[in-house]
Image 1 (cartoon, rainbow, N blue to C red):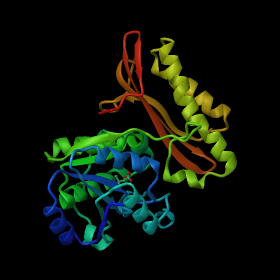
Image 2 (image 1 turned 120 degrees about the horizontal axis):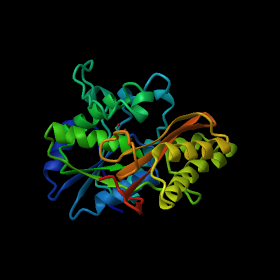
Image 3 (image 1 turned 180 degrees about the horizontal axis):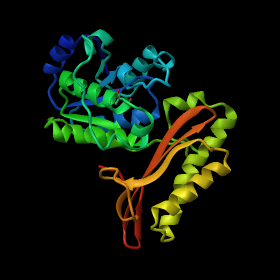
Length: 294
Ligand code: PAF
């Protein structure tokens, strides 16, 4: 077991990291760590000589009104055990007053990328995400940061922020981790009752159906989206925020399926909002499945 430094104060974090040699690799999280976070931590640990810093901070500014910040799972002691077991070097768990020392007046808005998909359904969410991630990048000053491809839109928003603000961090993505039946691992899965849990596998089924349609030569995004929506409806998943094919580079809409594309789904199953996606590279008749978006 690797000794784990658990740090809340920003000056102590900076002091501690100044003694570490090798790249600092940050995995930003809101805690309640699961196999998806572990994949990010494993990706971080694959960097030679890395000092792996996991931040745990439930960021209030990214919760929109419909969501309850207070019921977000908090399992700090368990998270520390997981971080120890998974070989992290530092857990940075700042207090809210240190991340937001005064009423926030400086926001990071990534236009365009945040108007669609989850951005259209969760007003202010990505502004909160981009702002807190910018703060974490300034505080931790990582060489590398790792995010999950399951939150593909978040990853693209952060990539654009890093590019446009000239931040020095490089970004890496970890693949989506799935349960045996295909359901993407998420902190929200614990809220699914047994019936909803069973039906939720239709989301992965819909992604697999889309892959099949692409292999069969379908290149009309509207037809694939219609098939996906019908597949979800057949499983009793009628409340679909979106099931859309878009460019995997910038989420722009597609007239025809070509190049690097993503199928992104957000659907409510038994009162729980789940998201998932699959990315493809389509070149003429060839389809490469399960690509990473960057
Ligand atoms: O993906 C998450 O857990 C959060 O959105 C993040 C990146 C830690 C920012 O609060």
